Length: 113
Ligand SMILES: [Zn+2]
Image (cartoon, rainbow, N blue to C red; front, side):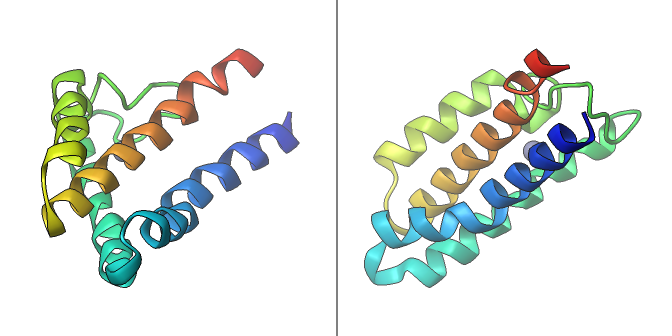
């Protein structure tokens, strides 16, 4: 069980910090450094956790709970990833990746506990 928790945590931070490098290099080849920085900056979306009590709960899904992690916003991030251009698209893609990371962090792993 300890090992599963460790893998879950490593995967979570890999998807938040390292995976965006690959996405930036594939989808924003000529501006990948700026894209990577903007995608990292989208982690500020987690500021919406300050309205929750407790602020972090590993047994609670962020998706559908925190204000900027609700499904209407997910649709906006997805549509923005398709239709926005330049820096705005980089931010939208970063937010979508963030939501995918948070989604798997709860729904993929809850099956194992
Ligand atoms: Zn989050």
